[in-house]
Structures are given as C-alpha cells and as structure tokens.
Amino acid sequence: MDTVRTCVGCRTRDSRSVLQRVIATEDRLVIDEHASMPGRGAWVHPARKCMELAIQRRAFVRAFRVPGPLDTQTLTDRLNSYGNQVNGSK
Image (cartoon, rainbow, N blue to C red):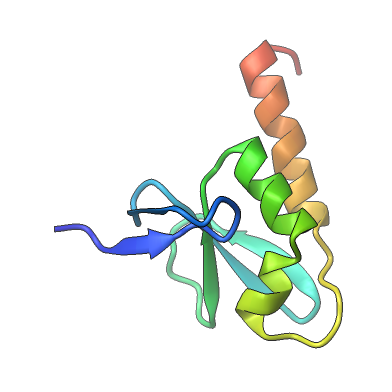
C-alpha cells in the first residue's frame, strides 16, 4: 500500500507516487526527484495548475514554516518545461 499525501496546490489527497516532493534549501525551493533529500518536504502534483496554485497561495511558505518569501525560480522553470513537453517545442 502506497502512502497518501496532500497536494499543497489543489489540497487533494493522492498517492505519494503520483505527487512531486519539494524541499526548501535556505530560501530556495528545490524539486526532490527521488523523494530522498533530508528535511521537511511539501508535496504537489506535477501539473501546472497545482504548482501555480501553491505559489499563488504561498502554500510552500506555510508548509516549510519560514518567515520570509521563497525563491520559486526552480518551480517556474519546471512549469515552463511542462508547457514545452506538451507542445513538443524546445
């Protein structure tokens, strides 16, 4: 049986294998590809809608319990690559 986590973007519960783990290192968000990096993690669906909702709602700041803003450039780059994969462009 797979562990269930809640997406910080859409707030729905889903299997851990479906969600992407994100961690905060200093003041920057990093995608944990293998879900094995140390530290507190937040889970989000690997979909543009969920990541945008999480960034807009400041869900990562709350999930990581940090006082200030986090650099979301890594997630923004990932969102842009999703669009490229779907459209087939480079």
